[in-house]
Length: 289
Image (cartoon, rainbow, N blue to C red; front, side):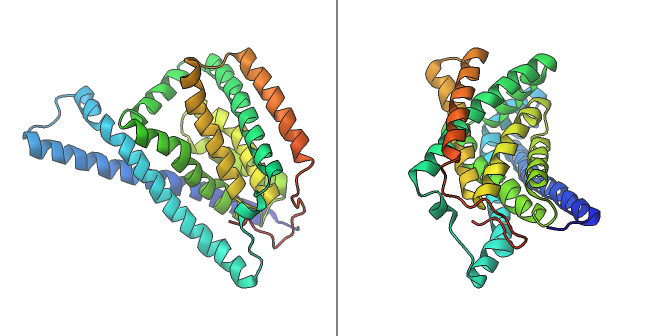
């Protein structure tokens, strides 16, 4: 597919716009919710917050709900964008194929699960190395996650394990990947999506370790020509990230993570060679729903 520098630059600017829109939606909801909560507190008590600590204690319960609402809003916005820009057009042309249908076989499910587990372990190693190289990065991430998950735990788990994968994949592996395929081949598409996915997380540790996971998710979405496998893989990764340390009572050691990484990525590579998926992409091919 012939591309130009201009078309590639346009794809990059659109990708940056998607990142800003994603952050903007959540930022607006967070700001509006925080202001509303402060107003309710003032109406109920007749007093403003004494200091930042009192404000954060009060708002921590609400931030979990605001994150939940923010993810739903992103799903609505990017889901509608994706449907109107891709799915509806494919249906009219008779070229639409359900992503669920594409993975409705044992090999695909086994591949996605193995890849998710393998990259979970790989990302954990990257996270540990990054934390050692950037002092304070793990503490910063801990503070951020503490604020997000400090409220209702059911809502927090649903947000991280289910809603975030849906919202992020619709933005980065549906809308963004679909647009970038007009200007880049697979390498450019995958790298652009991964870099923007890292930037979106807005803190050093998460930004760095999110990139390899972003590479894997973009590769899967591109090869399947569907966002659905990426959503499932992302959801498995996030669920394991929550459940495994809780079940073990501790995080995996680097040695355990390395073994897990090698075993499951090798298994994923073996299964991938036997997958019944079409890898050829054409100029008119877009990421299906």
